Amino acid sequence: MNGGRFFNRQAETLSRRELEMVRDRGIRWSVKHAYENNEFYRRRLQQVGVRPEDVKTADDLRKIPFTTKDDLRSLYPYGILAVPRTSLLEVHATSGTTGVPTLGFYTQNDLDVWGEVSARSLVMSGLTKEDILQITPSFGMFTGGFGFYYGARKVGAMIIPTGAGFSRRQIQYMLDFGTTMVCAVVSYILRLTETALEMGVDPRRDTKVRKGVFGSEMWTKEMKKRVAEAWDMDVYDIYGFTELCGPGVANDCYLHDGLHLWEDHFYAEVVDPKTGEPVEMEEKGELVFTTLTKEASPVLRYRCRDISYVYDSISCDCGRTHRRLGYISGRVDDMIKVSGVSIWPSAVESVLLKYPELGVEYQIIVSREEGRDRVKVVAELNKDAKTVDAARLRKKLEEDLRETLMTGVEVQLVEPLSLQRQEVGKAKRVVDMRS
Image 1 (cartoon, rainbow, N blue to C red):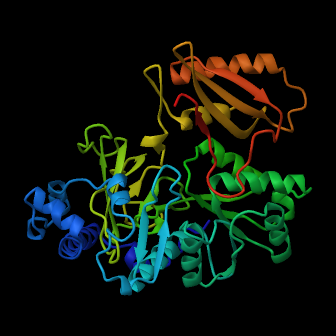
Image 2: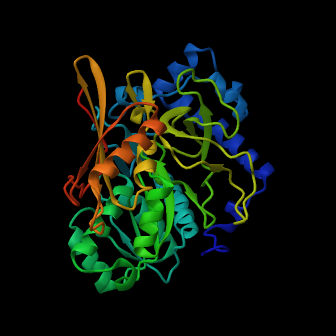
Image 3: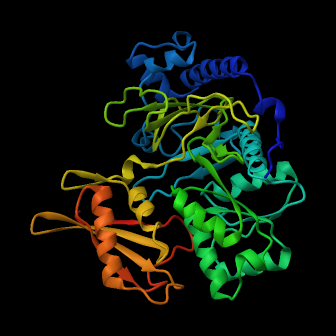
């Protein structure tokens, strides 16, 4: 537990009144900065008859249209800039697997802010100067590796910058250097767990890793429990994405009850994904972000497609005063429509991980046969499950999934370690063969 530790106590414990003043000042600055220095935003605001002086508080932001991923793609590469190109020190990009990547640019101040919010998040996750932090996300255009690196440097911890892949070597480094904390893409800690066991290494007994911070993918509380037990690890969530800065936008504290959003740098709204209208406090919807301090590539009311909610409570027993977001429960893009029924991969994962006979890897395959949509869930058996009545287990899973998803599902059980693993990047859980 790291209950009383802060990286920047003054900033992390601002009063609600102070935070709202900082927020509204940041909104005014960001709207003015984008309007005066970026053609896209100037035209966008002029089209709806809004000038910077019309936006004074968070409520006034609703006068401004949303920014979408397609908007940012249309501005590739330099159309989102609000500073001269010569002011840039760095650029990062999304994977671009579904089209042109979206970019995040950074001035020196932007990098300083990124390091600051990342350091706050890492300290909230338990990082101290005494720790040895192994950074497994890649050091490339993906923001993951650099985000953790900039934060850990500010904290002063020893860093092992392994980057992505080479899983056996990752485990060996943990043993050789005495790694005490690890950060990773969610699916990769699953791969490292398997690799350790393949090497005859018991993560609980043979390593010193007792803290971990993970992000970039949605995961369920059931999956977190599996990882925590495998490593005897305190498991934390970190949130962020390229268009804002990268990892460090929000993080959970030792109470593990929501993600503290750094409200002095980011403002979040929650809207109905279909209508764009605001939802009630603690009602799930799509997160919409406005940057408050971003110089190089500010975003106004950016629909990020992540599904979450904002806590009504403004206090937390950890002492931090920044509002909390609910854990990300999915993405607008992840929802699968099957014969008119909406299926979320997180719902499938929650069902599968109730069964100790199953491992943690699975895949959802959607196809169309004879004009009908069909869903098949392929799940690996747990290698420790010696005697399993596969037919009985399959039937029970199909019944449980049908009740949860409100549609029929075929279950296929496969041997341990038979599904393809991702050494680098995010796990591919859904295969839609209909298109």
